[in-house]
Length: 562
Image 1 (cartoon, helix red, strand yellow):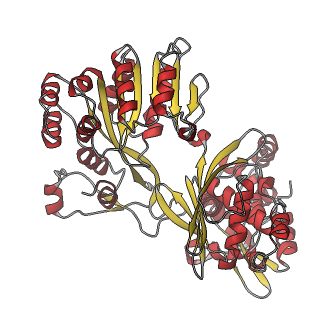
Image 2: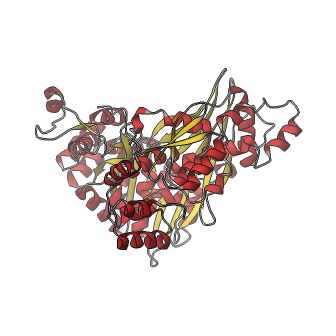
Image 3: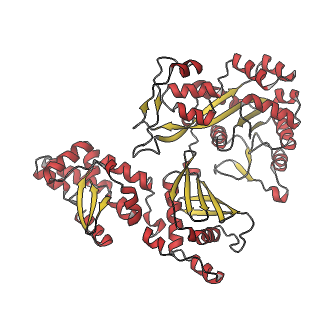
């Protein structure tokens, strides 16, 4: 322990001798910093500690919003030091580096940064929670194993990498090394994406530029802009990791990478390459089963919607369909249902493309259409395996739909997905596929249409006085307090949003709806009857989320096209 903070506070009469001993003991026992021990034991709150230290040591308290620290940190490439010491470089000149810290008494901190940069170190103080949030925004949540990515590569080092050689053998040998600059850069991007909770990473070459973007909370955010001449090196390294043919640059390829975070945790990454005019665009899909929340209470269902879903899951037979566009959370909704059903007394089998979340106790099958083993073939095989519950990743054709319907009619609970825009459109889509209406009404238990909307950041969301005309158009109560995103965001969010919530439309079946379907009712007619029976449309459910302050009107317009 290199901190003299507790001793300094006792000498300034801000801590008693007993409190100092308690803080030091807690820090050793919990393997945490003195600052964390002080806050955990509630001897100070974070702002009191910053102001108290400022008076004792005579250092100013900095406002991080006034500094372009993100660009400086990217240039320095000191992630390991920044996260280990919770010290943020906020400015520098020819001779001096200014660090925002919470504990200015840590002598090792100054030595390490001076050695790494060759600059003299000066301190300013920052509230602990503000500093922690700023570093988390840069590097995401700590994964504990900093050495998992090796030494970070700085922008200067990256800029010095030469264009790929025409000698393919020499290039392959260089890119095969895990400690080469390009390899370290890609590892760094992968770990950044995991820390920031990204679902996809896009590597995109253009004529005179190159960019790397992360999809976070459904929105693409630019992360890096390496030099354009690195395009072939980056794509070749990714293809080596995914065991693809690096000499083939004219055809799309698919592969997988396993990223090991630590001894116990690994993430599967799906790799897709696409030849473009200026090189190969590569998209990585991060399949992190540990990050998926399968708690049905955390998916955004209202109490009434959750009750309908759970009641449908309790039925011994029937079909539950999740519908919506790609990326609307259908798979997680299905898995949350399977998680409820996963008991030792039932046999559950799933056919997926690909298997995205591993669940112990469930027989998960990866379909392979290229060898003639698609959803229909998997479903036929399941029915010979004494199943109780069957999940089909997607109903894409009449053959799969017909087998799923027959399974639902013969004592099995079937869960699946379909690409339609609303619950009522699902009925018509299945009928147009060739499924007879009398088979539909005898097998369907519940149809759920869903979307994912970004959640407003609770720390920086702002009041939004909606015009009266909009309130009247969408039946928004006059007393409902409406919020909007802070475009500048804060250290806790991405542009005013943090995380996502589901918006749902749930269609159950009764006599009037069944009769209408049997008579071949149109989409508007089916929806009108369902609404009269108590169904809330996607728009109505979205307006509820708006009134609860969970999301914004602009986000509903983006997701639901209001």
